[in-house]
Length: 157
Image (cartoon, rainbow, N blue to C red; front, side):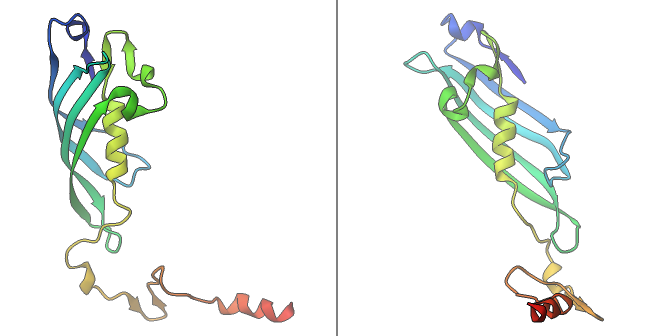
């Protein structure tokens, strides 16, 4: 998602308007099943120090599997990205400038979306599901379970 900043750097325009919708396709390894129609609105401008300044609002709905039932759960998110380019990306702002006059904001938006992905979501009605059965039960992180076969090894020491 490249934006031409030539008119901005030459001070012909005061800002570049960002108003677009994007669908992310390569979601493997993120825990997200679907991330379509993400709305990106805002402006790209120059601050008083002649640095690129971003003021973006990113909104959308990600589809994430339920932690208990694996049913798809809609998880709405809204992200405000505001600040100068060097402050936002901290490590190397030049890698986002494809040339001196174009800026690719997609990696910046993607990094912020990745930080919004929750560790776990539970679908409505999943609390009513039986979490144990004949010879098994769901163990949460709060419970401590001791393996009886391995505990026999403690006697040897």
